[in-house]
Length: 306
Image (cartoon, rainbow, N blue to C red; front, top):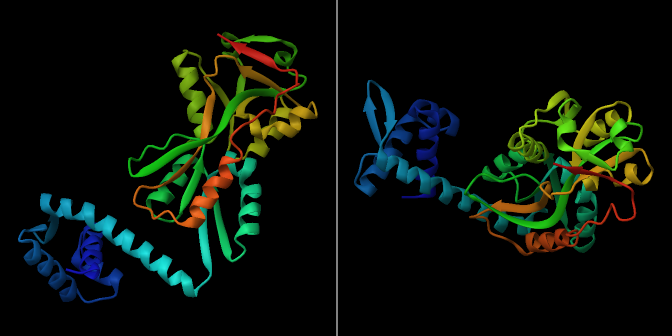
């Protein structure tokens, strides 16, 4: 039994047909059939039921598939790591849009200064997208503000953050020291896209408190949301880290949830089977330097209460 056997087996499962698997692997169908036969002989059990010219994976096949995916993935990572010695070294970082706008550029700048021989690839998306790419081994490490759902990923909270309600400086709520949660029922909201950790946290909070959200606009760009807020009478919820400049210039007013229900963390995420290199550990230490946030110190803000 070899890695080649496992790769063929996985492809047959994913394709559902030996002929299609053969086409994708650029080998003949008899070669695929022989590889599956050798696997079944090696383990002494059927991996597929063959009924009416269709393949149905058996319970033993499902057990093997679970291990096969992990073994092949680790083998490919080992190959990439070892072959990097003769090629350009690379680290792939995935960040959510919020994190990307807050700390990514500084983190990459510091990393490149210390590790100039490394190429840094970065990808920005929402929490769901980063999670999917980590599971597919398309990224080495992620930094997200949302909740990671897969048990195959390790998530370590490292950086403090919290959401704030924002509006333009001439919005009626900007003139109030205290804003009651009930007052948000009739307000119009600009929201992040589905899959955003920011949106998930806010929607869950409003649902728990039986407050409907009137959504008039959705965007995956915090810059678009801030610009629209400054030019309209809408409300939005964003990370406090994203509005520092506008708040200090008086362009955006902040209303803070006094119950701390919007407190959260930016988490470092990687696959549980990932080999954590020296470079990944160094990146983790860089991110930890952004742990605390004191952006609102000395700034007049409103308070949101139930």
